[in-house]
Image 1 (cartoon, rainbow, N blue to C red):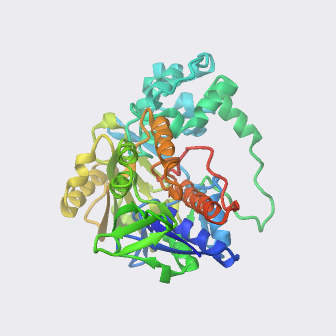
Image 2: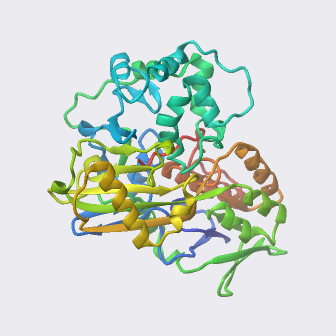
Image 3: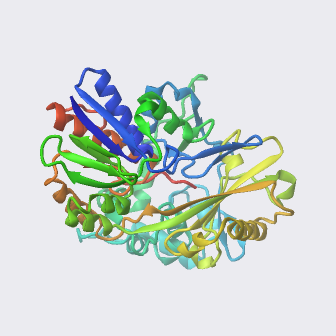
Length: 490
């Protein structure tokens, strides 16, 4: 009987565990166990319920077009718990020059696709509008080398688009700096659009023409760009943990070292309290910088490659108010704050508008974002300081009076991987070193996508590779992600 140890109980590790459970139930001769350093499962997916509010501390949704979360919900029997965003109130605002400006209708990501709303918007200057429109005539690049997201956006749409749209909309998703982000590693679709259509505007117009018409069937569920769960994103990680079997999911077990076993089984996994587990295969879903420490004794070159992936810290701060305290309409999903505005929050989601049922009647739930590549130091504040700072920011921007009923801070220290220029080469180096360690597999947000669906898909993929290695036959639990675009948490 082959034995597999999974290190890490976040979305990737739990997806791997459930895949191994299904394989075992299907007659494959394997045993497995998951070890998680914290006293809870779920990693950065964390939902709290308080006084009728539903608060997500990490990702609050996933990108609907990426199928893996929805497929997992079907497997778990909780697909009827999926919740679409309230797109009847779908508006996004950009904070600029001391005011909130509605993002013009027809702007997809950072690309304008409707003429009149874009031309009449006060958000952009006339030179900025003209420069964005020049995307239609700017020739596509003949250079096959990677470039930063900032360089790509400036080349196609101009500096004003970068500063007012791309930086807050794209850089903020990764809590990173677009001047360092690798285009090929984070948004390869933009590059593909440029090469196929010669213009991002033409590419998005073509996508809009090809989009299927809305269903006219009364029973058809409304499909929106973002999807979540009725009781918060933790429904998916709780569901995977329950289905995998919590008796095999060991919390409070910090793995500190993986050593070669010398003979079969091939690895010894050691914890901080001195426990050792023999394994024929190991799946590590921890962050790359933590994985580096775990595998350092096994392969110092692999550890060095893992440490070469930079990380940033971020935090979310959720605030509960009465609607009467807020000095403006909450008809919208929230606002983004360009770095050039020099504010201390990068965005704010109006959670109770975006997601029905997130707050009691006549109340509002706001979720602000702090930190990232350019303001990492702000995450070092204690909860009281951060809460005071965020209350001041939203009061100034939104005209809020009085104090919130309560607030919650969720911080993720070195929790956001940075796919900077050269990321794909770093992944190649890691893959090359792994070829010397048969039965060792890595998964999670560090490598090929940070969205919840990407992360879960990577966990299932790692489990499939482990089973193939141990049993000698491939089990197609997941088609590995081909894109890198992330679930946008705004």
